Length: 79
View: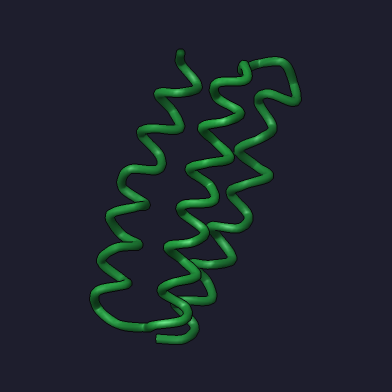
């Protein structure tokens, strides 16, 4: 319940600065930078929704967002 939501939110929030490391090191461009920020905010918002409303529906939504997040961020890194 509550602990799972807090862990999910902490992980989502931690991903935002970590995902910004490649552009800061010159290993990715502005397109990746924009995608990483937008996707990180979306993932953190889904985690926040799960913290606020610990229901099956919000948990499923968080799962779907997480399944989209990583492949799209990695694709943006390759482009």
